[in-house]
Length: 289
Image (cartoon, rainbow, N blue to C red; front, side, top):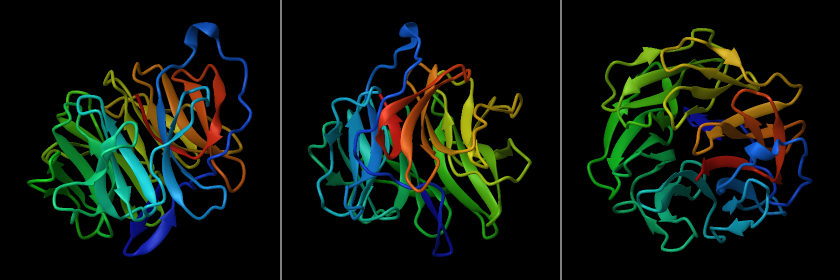
């Protein structure tokens, strides 16, 4: 994920190459991940970023976008069977397409620009972050009634994540280039509440489908908190960098981007931190369905 403050790009994670890697071991048979993971990755030449999907075992890799401008996935709506994504760079125009990459079309009139588009649980709305202004906007899924719901002259809000009942949004709020915390607000932008107070840099949040836990990256590790801000604790503590957590549909596992160098690979961790496994592809995850 790449955030932009005042037009200056600050890289929070790096999209990796879309080439298979070795798959890890030690996964309990009773906890074998299922479904499809949607992720962002560059071509082997490192020039073009596209959207892919794969099984949690790294098999069945499918390229969903094909060289029509850099594309970055945001979320998937089971109700609509569509992926919301950005075309034309990390702060390009908002588009949608089917889960197989067909019927790609701009959202609304095609003028909406931003990043991190997130479908509401019911699929009727999309929350997203505007390009250079650090505001979170809400728009109907057909592209109508775009409106700002957060953002001030002294803060910068990053990539929202919906509560499963569709009434609240978790997000990261920057108070400076070097200080950020996790916040929660109602879906109309009111009653914003700060959950973390340490100010350590964060870039992504993910609200679990069962509503019990919010995952976020903090200083290169993955952390968890209750939606009330209680029980904040580290899920990972490694020498590498973990970012961009995405929950499994059953809230029992998290896929994330992991790096011990310039490139990120996808890994899966048990929600209690009991095991991890390599997915077998490189990149940054966006959705799991």
